[in-house]
Length: 321
Image (cartoon, rainbow, N blue to C red; front, side, top):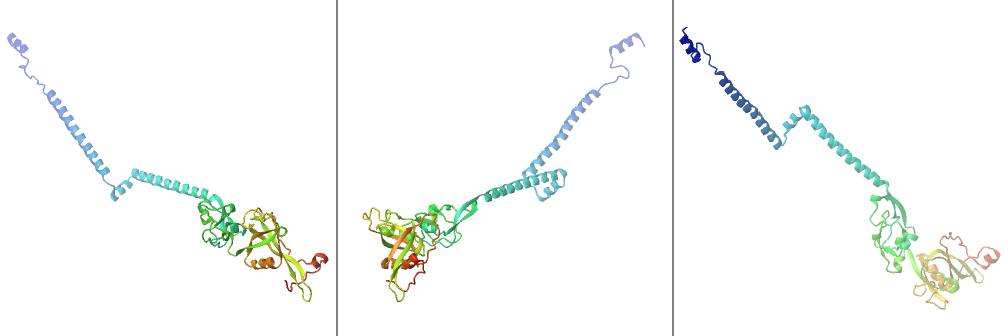
């Protein structure tokens, strides 16, 4: 090759024989860009589908098939079992608290007064207390009636406002303030007033609310003999309702300054009223004051001169005048 030809080859390289053109750099760059765009599109599409399906599942209620699908998986079964266990534990705790409350409440007892029999309307509280027309009973706190009475002192000065039946608790609403002497009497009791002098009636010492024994003295006439005085216990443990002419103060108090005679009203049984009235008009009557803890009186035989002095058997009561 000539010297001139060599110079031309040196100055123009692109005209050399078998010259290599490098176009793969641009193609590879284009391929990288296309690959990144396609991969972004492919990755973004499943995420959109997944989020849309999640919204659809949470926005609608589970059907029976959904529950079956949930229970068909291990994770779903564990979740359902955990929820059931929590619900069962809550129910168990609630039942235990209720049982504990019932046990604590039933263990507390209160004593109340319960009617032992029928207490009729108008029966005085004092006669209920003195006649033991009630019984003290222990009942659970939750079974105590509102206003139940536990002390007989609350019955003083009151009367039953309505009939009280056996087993019924005595309450404050069952009683009202008494309105007169009749409200203090039991159905089988009667009030009778007799006139007594100072010695026979313990004038100035006996007062309303005291209990006395009543002795009666009359003249008896044996068969074929002359009359002879006799004395016996007519009735025992009788309550004094009123003393004095107007019921105030003690027997023969300020309303009877001479202390000669005074009236006393006694609470007697309906079968005793006649005997006391007869003894008061046809003989003599004595009141004997009883203590609060008095024993039972057992003196039922008549006292005469023979039995008093000679200790002989009392005479019969063939007649009286």
